[in-house]
Length: 345
Image (cartoon, rainbow, N blue to C red):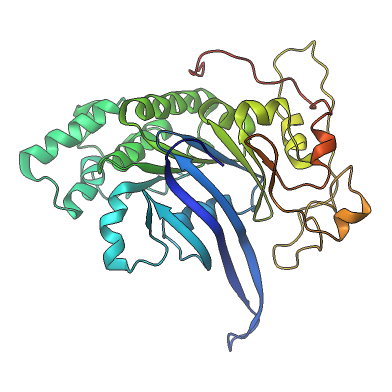
């Protein structure tokens, strides 16, 4: 699904959580949080993973990093399979994959000085120590837009955007190849979101980083991603280059997300794609297409046949029985506009 040399390869990733009914721990069902997703991320590429809350985005990211154990599937980083590695064997691999968490208020230890927070990965792996360690931490601070004079402060002395910069500095410390960005700007003000996105873009260009950028906002993902995967109820329902996804969305759920993105031009009248009802339970999933209960164009076969993710157009994958029809139907919103990679604060 990707022409770039793959850094990360995920195939058939599944994560189920058991539902226990009583004090004796009898399992009465499974929460299908991630239900067989597959994708690749090339070297220096950003894949945006988009979907509403509860669709399994963050669970997928944490399963890829082995912060939680996947139920099934294969995960390869730089060609090496990591889903079956022991904790001891995985330790050296962890240097190549890091995470930037959603909440900068909760992901940093308030008892530690921020210099120690950023230095902790370097100490854990014995990479550098003493004066050289402090110099390296100071350089990381400068690289993410913080002053080295702030290194001895505590977390509560920083704003939300500054805290997220500290989290990014910590993720950069071990020179990773892959960083999972788990909704890194959703807890920040809009102007600060733009600054963090621009910082991530600059760091990617400088260090050749690959990102799995998890978000629920298509407008945010548009600015940083090369390709976008749309998730619904634990599955990827569409995957394409971002320009193709915006110009020719091939899944009704993608169209509903796109139609909800605000347009700055007041003269433009958007054709809304309305969806009804609530997201089905990940424990009791509906038969057929999981989206058919809310889909405005569902047909009888959608209630019975579960569509596979298949390539409808070159490099454009969708899991919908009606994708061929949607390929010749105009999208509900204008395509993305060409322009600079920078986001205006």
